[in-house]
Length: 349
Figure 1 (tube, one colour):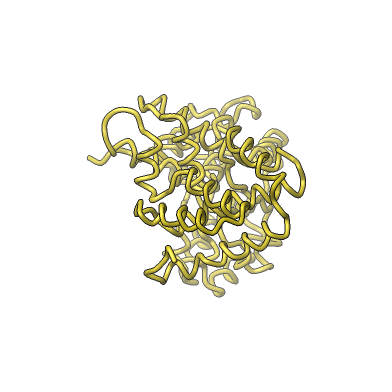
Figure 2: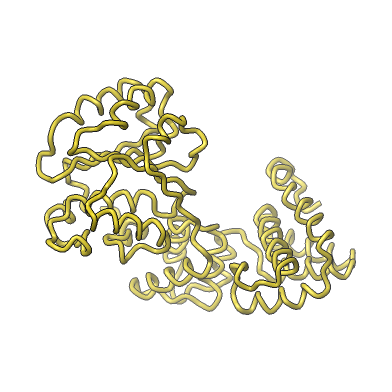
């Protein structure tokens, strides 16, 4: 039997366990305490930031039988455990990507009229809702506006701009933000410790940067690395698995740009190519570092940078030598290479 993946095993079971998204947690907690839960919610944001986890937590909270509303979801009662185990008949999860037709929407509308079989409320979680057809959205409109008292709809999407305004106006909207490198790396350390994995210095931060704010992606990489070999997970293993380059190459190229040293710049790029590293990933790392440098150069505000302490010292040193106009030009140049690098066999050129 296949083992359970880390992101499923460590999915948050209570509001306190959820990483980040404090603005969403606080609002939903208050709604539950004050018994002012809305009939339709829209969760938007990038992949892997907790939209589906939050939908399940809300489904638990509205059905939790703990006498203290502030303690819901408790994670122990019948409703909480059955939803966590995926056997709750009154919590219906649907992937809109494979249920796009108007017939699927009509089926929901017909079934929503029936009262819950076991719980207090019937919760419909529709993931990737932007994939529904126009006809399906139109069929859902009236039900979303005036659903039965026992029904709650939670719509989740990564592409909110594709959802009709008529649907948006009928939902309470919550925007989920990407996880910071610090939050992701801290969570990775906790999970690694609980799983008996040892992470070398810098490895969690490298995974976090590669995950670009997606906790699910970060846990997926950690799981792959756990199968990579025996002993501690090293920074070199992370770089090897992800096709990343060491920060040294990125730093060397930025130093060369600041010094207007063509030879040093060519040596840095050649070093990346010789390693067999992913040139696109190197370019993304470079753009991210240049962006951090530009932000610090323009504002002098450390709080705007999502980097470690060692990187912060390096960026502070560069800031006194950098020209803001040149930084903007470099960022434009390198960020524009992504599409070209996808199609050319001569990426290092």
